[in-house]
Amino acid sequence: MPEGPSVRKFHHLVSPFVGQQVVKTGGSSQKLHPATLQSLWLQDAQVHGKKLFLRFDPDEQMGSPGSHSLPEFLQQGAQKEEDVDPELTLGSNSQKISAGSTPSTKSDPSGFSAPEYLGDSPTAGGRRWLQVKFGLFGSVWVNNFSRAKKANKRGDWKDPVPRLVLHFGGGGFLAFYNCQMSWSPSPVVEPTCDILSKEFHRGQAMEALRQAQPVCYTLLDQRYFSGLGNIIKNEALYRAGIHPLSLGSLLSSLKLEALVNHVLEFSTDWLQGKFLGKQCHTQIYQKEQCPAGHQVLKEAFGPPDGFQRLTWWCPQCQPLLLPKGPQELQGS
Ligand SMILES: [Zn+2]
Image (cartoon, rainbow, N blue to C red; front, side, top):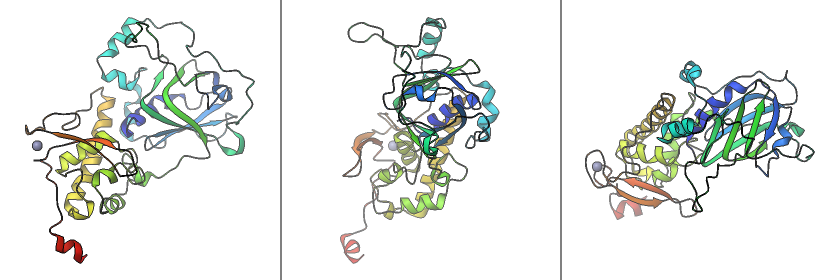
């Protein structure tokens, strides 16, 4: 799943379409039925953690278009935005994609959904927000479709199929790939937990980290660290010199504070880098050696009942903190 910074970038790509009417729809989504979006107006776009929320109204007048959660530096850089997928612009394939295929007039690869669909109306009962949750390779494309980067095993070049395509009155279109979409009454607005929000509450985060469980579990808990994913987890732990399995309850406030600082710093740098077309530079994630030249270890860690996530750490730079002694444990 793309982490907070990627979804912020998607939000940024979608924002120019706020205030426009959907004039044509397409896409393969079975659950959503893209045709139900026909003629609706995109009235708002917000990002919360790793989810993108788009508000659609049947009328043009409703609501004030805006980009509530867009940090200032994004708004400043808004004009520079390109119409290509943010993830791909970072890779070496981007040139091939734009140069190899002249802007195609080929029809929408997904075809269009039947307009007679009458189920689950998006605007019924005030469920006006389309919630978009991106998969690992999820992306948003503007005025362009994603192209096959290589042939499949059978030698066919098959372009990815967008889940949803929205053509707007202004002439442009958005294509959403690899994502889950559903209608929701309103976005879950908890900016105090969003690592990229100005309102992020550090005290609340520290409190969560103090739990007697491995800090690498707490960091990925979206209730406390919305937008934080596996890359940020690994990088922040390394930079703070904390072993991923250290119990939060054993770490000093100073250590935990450093961890929160690194989470925020790394996420913000990553996001800013995205807008400058820079790749996210990791020091430990998917590395064999840490910057100090030590051998890096890799293992899947996660709560017993939860998702196990690959974790990279340097046993020398991130020593495991053990309880001081069995007596102390018994005494507590
Ligand atoms: Zn090291």
